[in-house]
Image (tube, rainbow, N blue to C red):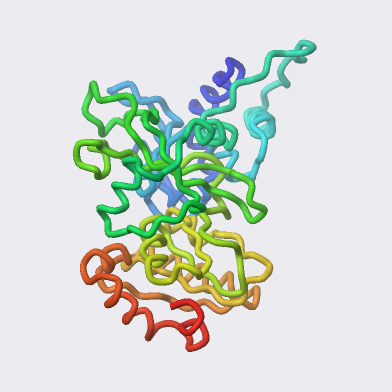
Amino acid sequence: MSSPASEVARRLGENAEAVCRRYLSNGRREGNYWMVGDISNSPGRSLYVRLASSANGGAPGKWTDAASGDHGDLLDVIAASCGHTAFRETLEEARRFLSMPPPPEAPRNPAPAKAPTGSPESARRLLAATKPLKASLGEAYLVGRSITDILPDYPLRFHPHCFYRAASDDAPGGRPAWPAMIAVVTDLAGTVTGVHRTWLDPETNDKAPIAYPRRAMGHLLGNGVRFGASGRVMAAGEGIETILSLRQVMPTLPMISGLSGAHLAAIAFPDLLKRLYVARDDDPAGDAALATLSERASQCGIDVLPLEPRQGDFNGDLRAVGRAAMAASLRSQLLPADRLKFL
C-alpha cells in the first residue's frame, strides 16, 4: 500500500467505530470489537473488526472473518460496501468520509503502482505464477477426498510456494509459504475477479497445519468458481469440494461454488438460468444461504430446489458411501427431466 493510502487506513482505524456504523450498519459493538456477518454487511457475528489497540500490538480497524479466514483493513470494508472496482475510488470515498483534503497532484508519467493487497489485480498476478493441477499436490489432495475425475478445463491450478500471512491464532515462527490449490473466481462475463487458496501440507496431502488453510482474495461478491458454461439449469454450493463431489456423479450439470454461505447467497444469476439446485451444507449458514437465494431467485422467475446431503456436506457423502449411493440419493431429489439429462 502506498504511503498516502497507509495514512488514510491509519485515520480510518482511529475512527473505526464510526466507519463500522456507516459501512457495516448491520453489525453492533461488542466490547472492543464490531461484530457483523461478513464484509458485505450481512447480519451475523462471523466478521469482527478491532476498534481499539490490543496489548499484543493489534491495530484498530483490522478485521478477520472467522468463517472464511479473510482479513484486511477498513479500506477493504469501504470497497466492498460501495462496490468499487478501482482502488482510487475507495481512497476517494475514505477521504470524503474523513473530511480529508484531496492528495497532491501526481507527477507526470508516475511509476506503475503496485496492486493493492487482496485486489483482483493481485489475484491475477498470483494466478499467473501457478502451474496445472495435474500431477501436483493439489490433485493428490482432491484424490484423498475421493474426487478423482478432475477435468483439464476445471478452474483449478497449483502454486508450489504460495505466501501465507500468519494470523494471531498461528504459532510464532511458522512457514511463510506453503503449496496451495488455487481456484479461479470469475464474474458472469468470465473475467477473473479473485482466487481462492487452499494451503496444503506435502507430508500429509491434506490441508496445511495453519489457523486458516482456506482464504480468498479479490472481488467475491456476486462471483464464484465456475464449472461448466452457464445454462437454464445449474447447481450452486458453498465449498469447492462440495461442487467437485457433485460433479463426480453429474459431470455435465453447470455448477458454481460461492466459497462461503454469505457469498453463495449473493451469487449473480445468469440470464439463461431458470432452475437452480442448491447443494446446501447442513448447518445454520447453509439454511440462511438457501433462504436468501430462494427469495432473490423468486423475484427473477428462477425456481430453487435444495439438494440435501446425508453427511453434512456432499464430500462427506462421497467419501462415506461412494458414488453409486450418492447418485441414488440425488436421483430422488432431481426433477425427472434433469435426472435423465444430468445424472
